[in-house]
Amino acid sequence: MSLMRTFAMMLGEIDFLNTYVHSYNQRGGEGERTLPFPLITFIILGVFMVFMPILLMNLLIGLAVGDIESVRRNAQLKRLAMQVKYIFVVNAPFSAVSNFAPLDLFYKQNY
Image (cartoon, rainbow, N blue to C red; front, side, top):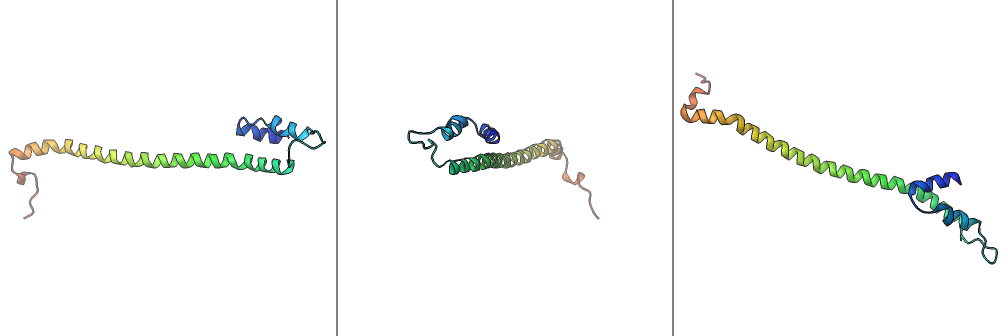
């Protein structure tokens, strides 16, 4: 029972003792347990306790990976914009000089 209780605490507030253990041990008016189908109930609870955290973690990881992909796309666009700005800044002095001097001075002529 302690292992089941530990797994139940990982799931949050499900009140494991009152919901499952005490109702399993209590007897109704005709001597029947107040927890119907206790074996099936504990099997379903155990399967839920094992698979639910795994599924939730996979869902959160999937959401994080999807967000990273959009961040990567935005970062790539910003990088390209920064490269264009850098090229304009570096080429600005050359374009100013080329207005006053002929372009033949800047290129090596192959004769």
